Amino acid sequence: MKVIIVGGGWSGCAAALSAQKQGAQVVLIERTDMLLGTGLVGGIMRNNGRYTAAEEMIAMGGGEIFQLTDQNSLHRDFDFPGHRHASLYNVATMEPVIRRFLLQKGITLQLSTRITDVKLSDNQIKHITGKCDKEALTFAGDVFIDTTGTAGPPANCNKYGNGCAMCILRCHSFGGRVSLAAKAGVKEMIGRKGDQVGAMSGSCKLLKESLATEIQNELNKTGVAVIPIPSAQIIKGKLALKACQQYALPEFENNIVLLDTGHAKLMSPFFPLEALREVPGFENARYEDPYAGGLGNSIRYVGMAPRDDTLKVDGVENLFCGGEKAGLLVGHTEAICTGTLAGYNAAKYVKGEKPLVLPAELAVGDAIQYVRTQMKTESGLGLKYTFSGSVFLERMQLKGLYSTDTKEIARRVDKTGLTHIFG
Ligand SMILES: Cc1cc2nc3c(=O)[nH]c(=O)nc-3n(C[C@H](O)[C@H](O)[C@H](O)COP(=O)(O)OP(=O)(O)OC[C@H]3O[C@@H](n4cnc5c(N)ncnc54)[C@H](O)[C@@H]3O)c2cc1C
Image (cartoon, rainbow, N blue to C red; front, side, top):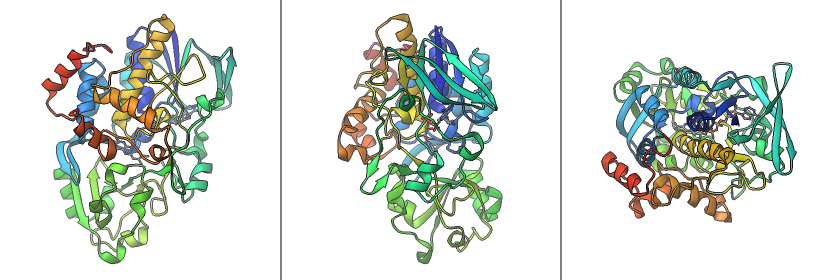
């Protein structure tokens, strides 16, 4: 039973682990020289409903990655504007932790390998091809998982954003994102709100050392610093561009909100450097990611695969998907949850067993189903969905799904008969 996963972001890593736990031989292929994709510059976990989702996954036996991010957190259980009980993993050390963990599990990691084509026969992928450096490679498998995300490549950042801002995806060095589903002939969906196609990533990283000592101390001590922006430097309308609707709150327009993920995570899609340096404490500020964070950020959500609630891609018999590829779901937690289900169901497919649909009585199941149906509507394609805020957190609250009571969450999972299903 051979499972081939393309895209080593959080969803690909979770899919790899989940398929391996079902007894599969797993190859995880990643275009760049590091795993985690956009997770290399993220870090926020367990804020608002993400806590519930993580605990559901732990109760279902799919919690190892959450345990690793918890262990590698610089700050735990703190609040920032609009967000409660958040944790921040250390972005500098997270990738090697996950890399070692997956290798220990016997998963083959094929880094610096960019997949560029797919060989299909009878609606099934037979093999995929790509290159590692100059060497042409072919990977054959029983089932494939597309976790290539939706960020970039530069043509999209040029067309729908402010140009390439030189982000962590490093498209110019490793080649841009290529979608497996699209290569298999699947017509992908595009997020769109009014004139904006896709959405701009919602945060940057500043070098902590470039900030005033008081700000550094505050960040190191509490994990968060909220600095009012003098009115002349407030940039109106920037929040509307954001991929992360959960942070499109007035507090984030009128203040600089920084979070300590090792670097200072600036909760804004971009901020012109000259204007930023006018703010007291930021006189020497310098961007760490994206390098041109004064101009813009990466554009995401321009290529999502139509799929069912088992996360099988429509129209290709042996292709599953997870993370942003599976819809307008924003976040590491969301990518880990969907990746875990995709890996599990890919293995079930090879075994000839019935795939799993997570029930809507669980926040994770409801999110997967709700996003699929919402994406069929024009208005739904203009929104983003996350356990941590905005429309989906409101829905969780209305349905009584939001909870931080781990025992209650475990009981809820038990009621659905899914305790340790991924274990
Ligand atoms: C700047 C920024 C900050 C963020 N901060 C947070 C945060 O603090 N907390 C949070 O929860 N979420 C955050 N997010 C959102 C979150 O990172 C993503 O929604 C989630 O991690 C997406 O995971 P993914 O695996 O679906 O995709 P990605 O992370 O995009 O991973 C896809 C991977 O596929 C690889 N790939 C693409 N094409 C190919 C190919 N043809 N062959 C081989 N490999 C390929 C890419 O190189 C990449 O590594 C942030 C996003 C950004 C951009």
